[in-house]
Length: 323
Image 1 (spheres, helix red, strand yellow):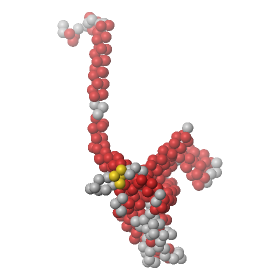
Image 2: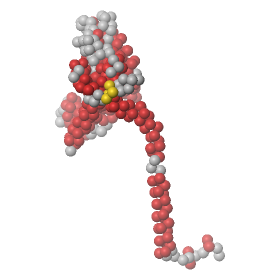
Image 3: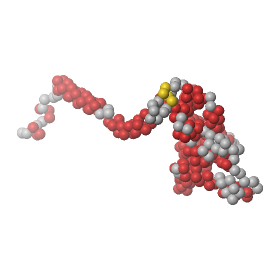
Image 4: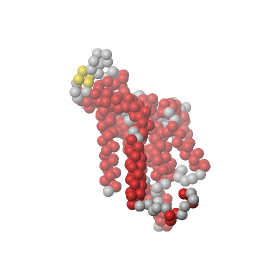
């Protein structure tokens, strides 16, 4: 009789030694598998290595170089001279820097508030499911993906200061005279602000749409039963439910506003008469047009510190509210 045909009762039972040997074998195999997995801890870093190298070469090394240059009198081909905090004193004591910093704060505040308000309104209008809504959302998001140079040139054409300009023609239909827009010191800042809001609102809209999915629908029904109007439901249900989204968007929009450069540079280049000069355009002019690279680097470091402080303050306020 073969072993396959043998009576199972006649076979010797597995004793303690056999079970102990099995556990030892299984434990050893588990340790070997764990060791193999632990030996591949570098695999995720291997995939991240190309991106990290690009960040290192094009971002972190230039940041360290800019920080070093901010304490030096940079003289290309002649050698740099250490001047300590002289560049920072020059920037902070400059009337042009103070005006540019004020313009930056005003522009950042206006664009942040305008883009968040318009983005929330668009999100409320486009909330829901449907093919048409998907198409409308995609169309509304186009300003974000269009290159900023194209956006600036488009608005430059619309802001043409003559009476036959596009926006001036519309104003003429409702009885208002032609405006200089970006060519008038009194309206140039507001004109750039409108351009920034138009481009930033669709981005905020998409984040608001994602946040609206987490708002409890039962609260809407309860508020409706209590007789709350649509505006009251938005104010007392939607806005509190989107508090964390508002915090995130405020940080992103504020950083975007503080670092505004391209649209100002392409539309007005800080003019007319310095009415739209912001910190980034001033840094560009000091560093590249006037060849005062150390002073420009000091301005860039100050802007980075201001952005970092704003981010940390908002983060601390969020943590305090969540407790």
